[in-house]
Image (cartoon, rainbow, N blue to C red; front, side):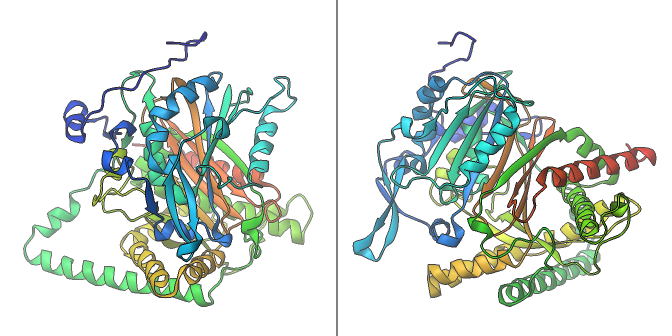
Length: 523
């Protein structure tokens, strides 16, 4: 049936096996099809109790109480009844979203998930809003800021959905999906989101996402006999050396190595402060233009323009501290040898990228549901460059070096080993110490290639982030069709002007694009 403005309320489609789904849909547009949440493993769906994984337990420590926030802009008015009618057939069929967190005090305080009946009225929050609000964008921003002052009540499953029917500059209505991080990482939750949506152009089809195309360059080298041995030996030695250095720096960071105290680095206790979420949506085609012109990846471009934006922002902040005149930001006010690193969260599943949800729910599969993330400590070069393209080249060099390392796997293994040997408190202290000794957190998630609808509501943008982390700054890049949304989560006590920082990153992208076009590098 349909609402008065045409938002369709569909019955669940028939269940299909993974193999049948693959045969029917195949691969399209260089992407991989998602899989309906109704295909989840029935055996797992029927489990009444399940212990928390080590990573999930970690996210319930007082200094690591993380919540993921996904801000979804809609192109139409939001109809809460449509969500309430569809959620039982999709989201609530996932065990984590229909289970309580229970602490068994009689068994040493062990935590477990216990299935329960879900009262949607306690999870779907619909505030009574004045449609004539003077500044809708500011209202939505303040609403999310106030939301970050709270945690999800543990007397119910650890998620909620806030629906704001208020027209802003980018959307007719805004949905704020809040999930406790113990339910899953970004890869898991993005897979879940895709399973709950459909393509606008084809309401029965699931979204598709980009997949990386492997190059054949290395294969050609390996097929050259003698050179195979030389290249192979060098490749292995370099991998070993990079991993050794990265793990050593990780341990050194856990012990004593701390980033330079800059206007971006939060003081101890930042994880307990509320967060201001600001975001801007820009053209993904602009980033692809730079990518193709310089033979890069989108991730290289995102890191490069972030590095440039942080340099611009810090130069202004140091200039404001030392010189109040109007020309301060044009001078080089940056101190020498700034150590500024980002904690980059890496999906360590053997099957990389966004996974089909049905696969993630299978037991003993490479595509696992949950929190399967390792740390990579990524250094940013903070400096003023005459050539904007230098920021991109430096970022590519750094990320290429990090790609040829097993740092993420080893840091995950170290945290897991500490947890098994010394318990959750020591593991939490180790992770917290490493993160708090760096300056920020960075992530880049790929989204659907097509315009999608959430239960018939066309989506204008998607802006994910989180709060509760020990950093004063978190930067997320999220692609969607031909758009890229930059999302900042900041502690305003450290960064009082987050919109200015976001503008600096956007302006840096524009400068890089202009430099590429001016030099005729566009292919």
